[in-house]
Length: 127
Image (cartoon, helix red, strand yellow):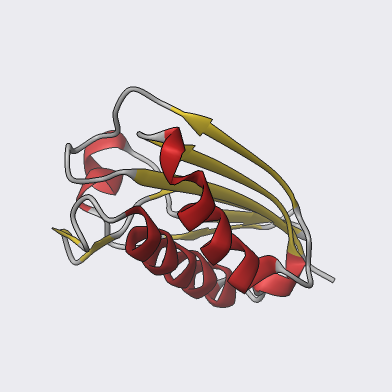
């Protein structure tokens, strides 16, 4: 099967050696994504705003690989404060309220930078 990698431009991609998203056949895996654009953290400490930016980044990656949010079957959400679950969940619902992927949300002690409070992974099956 053909493999297609998509680089999103995160400063950590080249340092760690990963792609923002990878498509093999009709399966797409989107790596843990934070609200980082052109190396700049968006909305430091704001879980709701970061979640919205993250889904925009994920949508861009999916589109680049011939897919979209409608194809998402699973999301995994990591938050540094589980008390923000309603704000994060609200935004998840805005993007996936009709799609209803399987999802998990867990609290983690921290992410790669102290201003980042949400990280999200996604899995999509095209077609």
